[in-house]
Length: 324
Image (cartoon, rainbow, N blue to C red; front, top):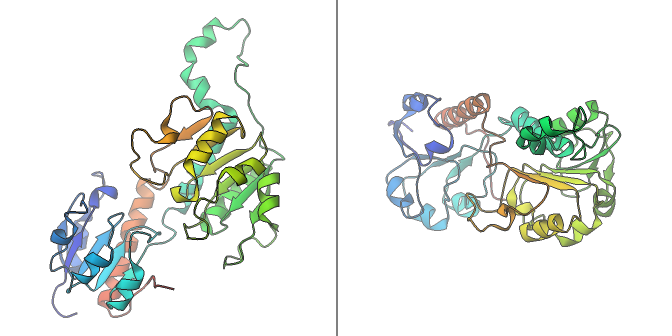
């Protein structure tokens, strides 16, 4: 590409709340920044763009086929569920993503959620005024679960899942991994790969770290929840679509499992009447998809976006995601 390309960032607010300098992108083209882009605005916002950057804006077949100048889609995330990869491939458009930028902070957030669940820390923090009223030096109102010796079940043993398992081992937990025939990950071969039945029935904690696919959509459902121990905890910092959210709400209300912590939901932001936002659901922690949002991670993400654009302009595209 000889002329300076036109670059459009469709949803810069998802990456920069005001503490990043995105102007560096102007070194690689004529950049236009949109804090957000609605579905109705997408075509107008990417008009004549050679390169678009998107986090969550959907780039479907309609958008692709009506964008004749488009040559590169840079997804400033790892997941590319919002891109029609087949149509992009058929149209000769390269799609690139950024992987591994958030591994440390997502693992940290996962463990933070787990520790809050097991210690009921959130409940004690909300009840600080009750301590002076206690007849003894402490309070034993809410149970505290020790993680040492417990079995951590990891679904998805890529970089994030592996780091969660490594930290869990340091706290005395035993690790096993959900066996998936299509998985190409060979991290930590010493961790047993177990069947679905064994995974759900024997895990004390289940933590999801897998991409969303047609095969694993709603993998957490009434059947798998029924297999879990009533003392078990469930954590999802991966993709909301992995969970049947009505089934999880029912399981928590009936105390079928001991608790759950989520950083993702199937629709984000969720509707006000979302089944898991009900105040009467016990032992549920929800954070608003913040596991990846540390400044350090977002700086790495920006570096990855820049690297993908640089590689494309040099004629050697990197981190290309293709339709299988």
